[in-house]
Length: 121
Image (cartoon, rainbow, N blue to C red; front, top):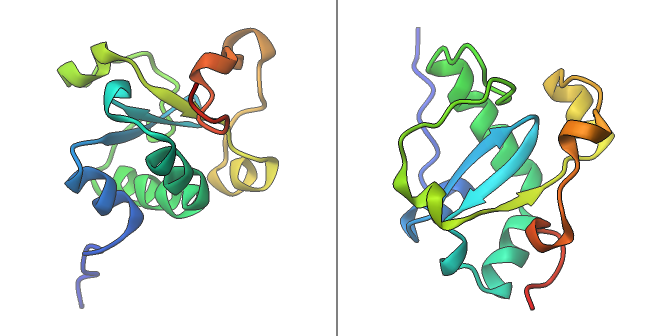
């Protein structure tokens, strides 16, 4: 049985090489720390959203994460999270592929100031 090699130069590894971290939170992509963001990085994440989400989902599978889509409120201990983050909502097609729960407008809404799809001001 052959092992599947981990991607070497994927969008997620490129983000991590620049000292960003990404995770899924309630089936939304969260990338932090916010102070390091500029519009070029924000656009890179937007352009590669599906690839980044797919890789995070695979990581969750291979690490046997009991909550790969991030529905359980847990802090992974990364202090960079305290500096803020940006959130990218996923379209219905990606959410269906991931097996995400339906969107709950009470819990899944976030302000425009945190929306990664919008240019930084």
